[in-house]
Image (cartoon, rainbow over all chains, first blue to last red; front, side, top):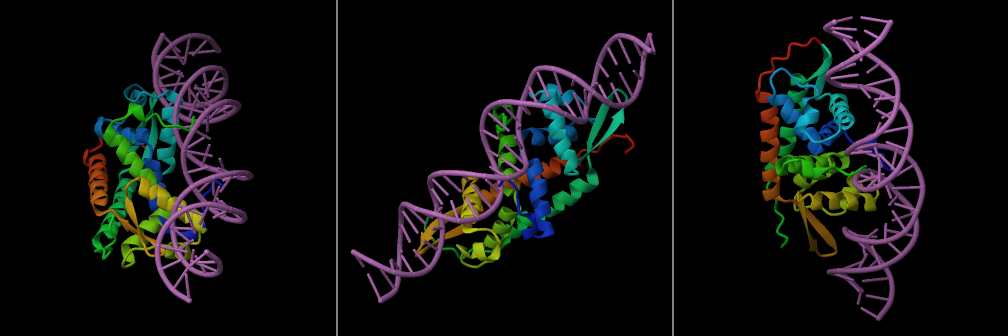
Length: 113
Length: 113
DNA sequence: CCATTTTATCGTAATATTGCAATATTACAT
DNA sequence: ATGTAATATTGCAATATTACGATAAAATGG
């Protein structure tokens, strides 16, 4: 039904999934990378850098903002977006733990592929 | 239009996004964690552990398989799924690089939030 | 072969996502 | 106030996702 049964899962699993979902689009990956590279935040440069229409970029920014990965502030005539360092670190910790956890256990799986 | 313009982005961005998208559902996070914990791979135990119907679990497994994160083999009456260690390590590297990259640069953003 | 068990696939309904044109909003300058 | 530049919002169309019941397929045990 297009709706996830989040109540079945732990907070941690839901959080990892929500944040992964926010990164789960190449435009948003590109936006995050640009936000980290360009000095002094970014506004509409993203529209020029990425080849998508302005409303589409704005929408992707809203997704990232809702996920808490970025923050926006009004700065003159244009908005100013930055990666939220606190939230980013939190996400980084969650994800790295998860990545490590799913790797550490040795698999006794001897099935032939 | 519900379809991503992947041609606008680099292979690396598309790959990060594709793999993040695969992890972007709590059921799949839970499945990956279970696959890493349970000895000797897993099959239909996932249906019991997670509260979703069997076809739904099977569908999530297909998503993870398509993303290359897990592999499946027939083992007797039931299938046997494992995390693909090579692909997992590759994904882990990509993701950790991305996480680190977006964090390292100091932001001169002085906007007040 | 037939029944059983296990998993995959099909079909379908509900909802979400992606993308853009058109339009509204916001902040600043004049 | 009026105009301009930059973003956000709205509305919409196309497609994707999520979930499950029903059914098919595959392997084993009898």
